[in-house]
Image (cartoon, rainbow, N blue to C red; front, side, top):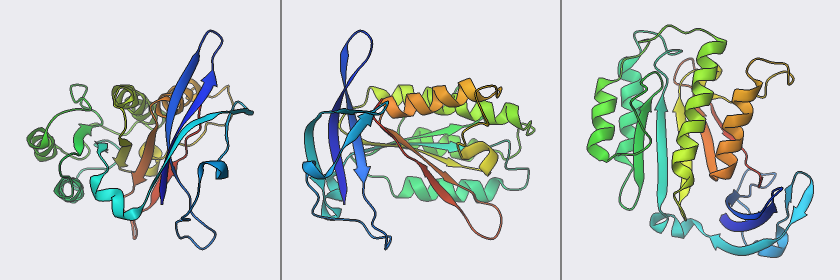
Length: 225
């Protein structure tokens, strides 16, 4: 089951509305259904804020729910020799897209790729993708990914009434947002910027690791800010 709510927060100068998508999973790993607005509570910096509207979305409604998905392809952490595997996964995503979905492909190291375009543009970018095109530089590459996530989220922020997601295919160090160890970390400001941008845009981040014995999927939760 999915829910969409609008919450009102306060900044130092004005009130604003943030739209949130919520998926509730029980202890058994299955979706929890039958929830109402009264079952939810949203806090902004620890302070409770009002829920203005609430809409429940059942599984049967998913076919009619518009989605905006940006697929980020790691072309640095995923070393040479993995081009075909990455392209196959990306094309599988495109094959599942249908109107009214919006879909875009962003190659991590390609500064010209933007989070918009049509199906043909997505397929062309996938065809041009090369793994390991830029050497992996550890923290610097991770910060490049964080900047990319923030930029994509700001593009998606203007999109209303859609399920929005960034799907990153690549190694954990690139695709899985992990909070740096303290504010003194050199990556701290990039992490804060990326997480804040995704929260304001109501955009989830999913990561898929295509290498190794199994793929892993993670989700960065959102809160109203």
